[in-house]
Length: 283
Image (tube, rainbow, N blue to C red; front, side, top):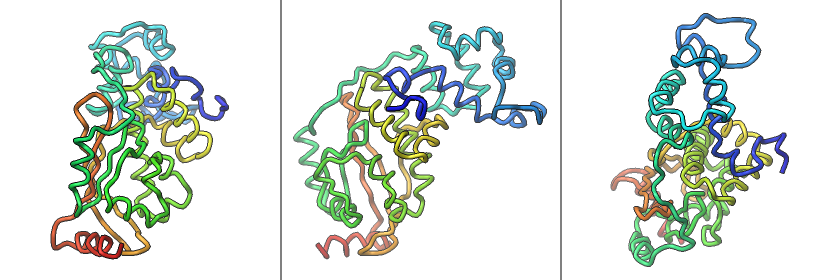
């Protein structure tokens, strides 16, 4: 794997505080924080000295923070930096996690799905549902989920990685909102999970692989967006039923495994509900 192409070649790069700060600093426009525009700027975003001024810390200290030479910065300093970077609550918490100032909840990946979850999944028969792990590998799915994604040629029973599938070239045809869904949801959630599972070599390999293979992924990852669970409307352009709009919910399994139940629903009487019924009946 080429580190020149991605900047990702070992575990530390995925959860590196300095790289995260640099990426977020590049996203802050000077005029957003009341600084004058300067046509001589050679890089996007704020300069280090500007960020330090806004955060109320010395330029030397902030430089050491980005270079990984400032050990265990205080909560007060991190909160000040977060405010200067205009981070939301989820991203601020991610910053504290990267700095080692937040105690990580015990996490341990499970290789399989608990029988009780399998039973619940099998009992859901009127809307698609699936179980994924923190890397977004599909661990289990119900009949309607397999029918829904099977229309795109995706075999959920083979345990594919959902992020890999989304960045396949053909996926753009299946999701009218592909760009927003990948950038602001899928990649942002993957970044959050990478900090919760910092020793996961498979996660690091996945991020590196996608960064090399897909320029879109590399650019989205470089934005350093962080998001918790992805909920909201998802639109599909399905070959069997046409445009289909479903509401996605994610339910985190409370056992530290990183697994989550994902459901795609539509209210009775809606177009989405009728099309799901049609999809199920046509199998």
